[in-house]
Image (tube, rainbow, N blue to C red; front, side, top):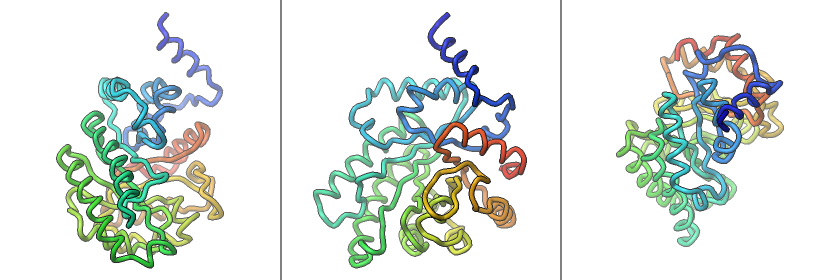
Length: 285
């Protein structure tokens, strides 16, 4: 019996493992998977359940991982007919930095992530703007010029490989900065990734304040839940976000963004999939 078989047996003995087949749901969405977790812990689970990963490239994997390992996982996903998306690194980066040395390092790491587009052939690569009004707001014009140059460069790399560049909300408290940037990027290759949990925990504003303005660019959703106090990344329906109302708006507006679930535990993953099964929110996707 090979190691892969042993891993699969161990996985299927996991008490968290549901008996329900969610492949009808997982075929319509992506699940966040930090690189080392996907590689070392969850690859067999993803392959077995037909789960399409959003591969997180945070940390040092872009410096330390063997190119062969990236290719190996890409081949495994491809052979299982699983698409993927990528999530570019976020920590310690300043894509609109006024300091040229900080900007150089930030762009260098983002370029390393963008090189993996050729390897994984993702549908999208999600990036964070890194804009905070109480910091960059004092130099908004200068920050915007530099940030736009950063995203223009990544947009070109993504577009050349049939991949969408998605700019996600994090600490931004209004849609202003996304609207300004996206209006200057190519709408055919760049878009907005709305993160429901970040809206509640950081922006303290409703999606209703964002989507009427950013709907023309909406290309992806990051779905997780909380109660507004902190960024808990709970399973869907375990916090206070009204996902039913959001999806009613999407349906009425004929919007069909990519969907990514961002649970931070396996238990919350199965809870989210059961929630989507019961609510049938993805029936039109």
